[in-house]
Length: 400
Image (cartoon, rainbow, N blue to C red; front, side):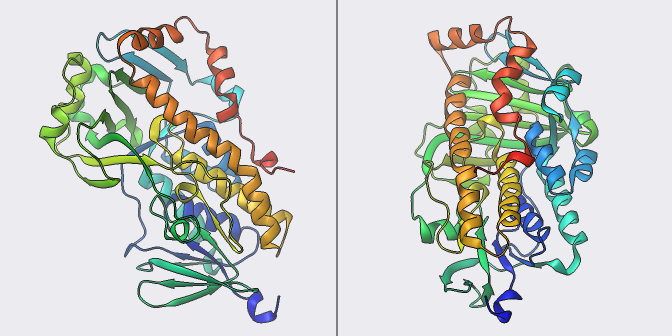
């Protein structure tokens, strides 16, 4: 590597949760970073997300654990009810025993607060990370000593390597993989409701889900309980395309006939909704192409049913940083080891999320089987079942 190349940054396409986490992880190895974000300003759209213990393990490894903890709401339990008859399907306490088992809490948080925690950590690094907005990656060229990224403004961005963290519609993935999305046909409506407008009989300190035939409803507190996140999902009767747009109150109201009144009141609350037509992609066995690799939703977009999209992006970033630390200056070896460490785990989450969606939305006899599945199960048995997901450790994240 010549002296000119040595001074170049690692480029990160995307300034969302995955991109900022990647920037933090790489910069903490002593390599300068340049983040290319297509939006005119850095920020995060959406509403609330759930964070498993593995997310907090990753936050700690990235040096922003206390920031994230200070913005999260810590739930007492995860609870599932049948949306037709209010039967309690399952309850998983997330208190002391849960934290002792996994070393970290379960929490809920606004997406913007996750992003803010990462952005503060990045800015604390000063000139180690350059943040460029209004820079939409269009294509990549590679050479022996690095890469050049061209954005839609016609600007060239030379770098040592490229991390494609540019989300579900990744330009980097499109160039190197070129695969199509798998449209789920499931539509998600999300909104945030102020506490004063939220039903008192549902103001639980819990990540709560009401499961019904071809649908489910979720609610949990945000921002110290001053707001509540409301998420409803249904199987669309229309041909869907992967998209985000404003929701229609009439549409969402039309999909929940037969739901018990207590759960149904959730869809009457929001004054406005955001509508996501969801999709994922088939897991792939290669993310790395020369000096370019993929991370987060660009690598493994997944359905929301395990609440692990952001968590997996954070784990990716920590693992990538560890691989670069283990193989300083050798991007081929570092990227290969990062990929080898992450492919199987993230593929398992993608496939498990699909199956969990099927379980949530069971009807007929399958619904009865689902409701019997967790009846009388002790917390420790739930914890055992979650060990593969929540027991991830930063210090042992690299494959041999």
